[in-house]
Structure formats: C-alpha cells, structure tokens
Image 1 (cartoon, one colour):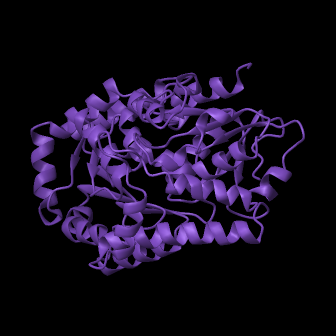
Image 2 (cartoon, rainbow, N blue to C red; image 1 turned 45 degrees about the horizontal axis):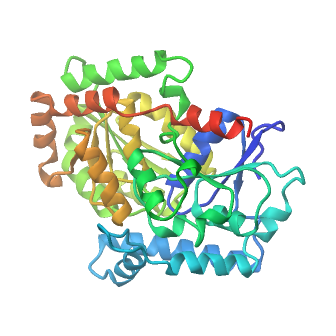
Length: 404
C-alpha cells in the first residue's frame, strides 16, 4: 500500500489492466492525499490471487497486442466474452458469476485482512476488488469508478441490490447502462472522470487557461513554437506498428524542428525499448524535439505525463480513458478502438466534436498542415474545452468524504 498521507480518509484500490485504472487512481489519490493500494501486487496477493491476476493480465496484454498482427484468435475470443450488449439484447452473466466464484475461492482475502478494523472508505477503479468487497459484505463505504462511457456486465454484481456498492460514472449514458444492469438509481453518482487537478481549474484556473491559450496559438500557427504530438502507449503496448509508421512519416519534420513528439511508455519496458530503437533508427534519439516518458514507478511516470500535457497540442491515442482529457482543450486523433468499450468511447468524443480518426499515416504531415490551416484542429480543441466536464476529481473527493 502506497501511503500518500498517514491521515488519508480513504483508500483507492487499483490494478494493472491497461493504464487507465491506474491513471484514474493516481489522479484521485493525488487530489485527496489518499492511499493507493495496488491489489494485484505484494503484499496483497496470495497464491490464488497471483494465479488470477497473472492470468487476467497476460490475457489482456496479449489479446490487445494481437490488434497489430494477422492472427487475432485471442483478441476475438476476449472481445467476444467482454462484448457490451447491443440494443435490448440481454447481457451475459457468465463473467459476473465467475467473479462471484473467485470471491468464494478466497481471492482478495489478503487485502481485506490488511485493512484497519475501522473499515476505511474504499474507492475502486477496477471492478474485481469492488466485486470482492461486495461479496464479502465489506462494512465500510464502498465506491466503484467507471473509467469508460460504457462497459460490460462484469462491472456489476450478480445481484446488485444486495449490497452497499455505490457507482461513480463519467457521463449520464453510463448511468443508464448501470440501471439496465439492475443497479438502483440512488447508488449511481454522475461525477465525471478524474482528470489531473493541476489542469482542471479545481482550485486555480490559471494553469488550465495558460496552457490552453498557448495551445490555441500553436494550433492557429500564431506561434513559432513547434506543434507537439503525444503518442501514449497503453499498458499492453499495443499499436507499436502505427507509432513506427508515424515516426517514418514525420521524422523529417522533427529534424527540421517544426514538429515535436512525446512518446509515453509508463512502466512498460517493452514499449520503452521499442521507442528508443525507433528513435535511434532515424537519428532523432537525442533531438530536443523528441521525448520518451518512462519510469519503473508507474505513478511517477503519470506525474511526468501530467506535466507534459502543458506543452502537448494533439494526442494520438486509441479511445481509452484518455478520451476524457479532451476536456482540457486538446484534440484527440484516434487509433482504432480495441474492444467494444473503446468503440463507445470513440462515439462519445466524435459525437461531441472533439476528435477525429487518424488518417493514412503516410499522409499525416499533409493532413496535419491542412487541418491547422482550416482550423479543424483548433475547433476540436475549443469544443472539448468549452463543452466537456472536467471537475470529476473534486466531485469524487467530495462524494467519498461526505457524511453518510
């Protein structure tokens, strides 16, 4: 358990299943001076826990990476069992029942035994510890944050009316999905997604406004500062092939100083090594116009990511939880979604006029120049800044620290 503050009023549980759940946990804990517990790691995992977490993380990682290749058997299987129901189709209960069985097998026992007898408030950013706390009838206050606009039935217990689990959701559509899964409306709170507080205007809007005004100037070409692109890898390190194609396309612009590229790798050593080799192959590894963010401490790398947002103008990403960062006033350029939840995230941002899909990468420099000239990218940035919610982190903190 990583102590942020000895007087922390709640514990944020999280696990590696992509970076999204960890990123959300970090932003919440940083704002609320809360404790973060990585329940997928020592000292909270026994033998059964380790088998479960290793199996789940390996499946997620390899399924996600298959999107780069021709053989997608694992990806198709994983997507099949985690697919969000369409229309009035009933959701599959298989995964929810399986999670209930894990609770009966004792998964999570070591973590719950470590908790203070005063039963601190728990804030979960991944479904498994939340479901386990539900089935253990955890006596403390219990909250689960949804990190996507839509999600599979596994995020809800088999009988959601039988316990005290409260939900925090990023958008109203997420609340509708929970209700369709049987969650009582009074257990659902629309909070928004927890963005880094330094840029959300929670206490002081100056950083947010200053960063946005500078970005708007660069997108308008009113500034001599080069445009900065960020390519954040997922926890699985998917889409390395597209990063390689992008670097091939823009290496000349990087060398002449008209574009800058930041690659975020988190604590993924495979992605870090690949990005370094890629930059070396184009002789841009020591350029002032390239940067790789990597750290063995994932939360420290998130701090560096949050700092890099100040100078970032475009984010090239699959539509993960990063879709909510469009509220900071930066256009999103989407890689193809991985999973039905990311397809729904993409729809959310496209419909709100804050994102576009990545064009043919070989044509990217020309596309970029044209869309700066016609102010398409500027319009995307302004729409996100103007219309999307960004006070999720304070909404969540106020909710979980409020009196019952």
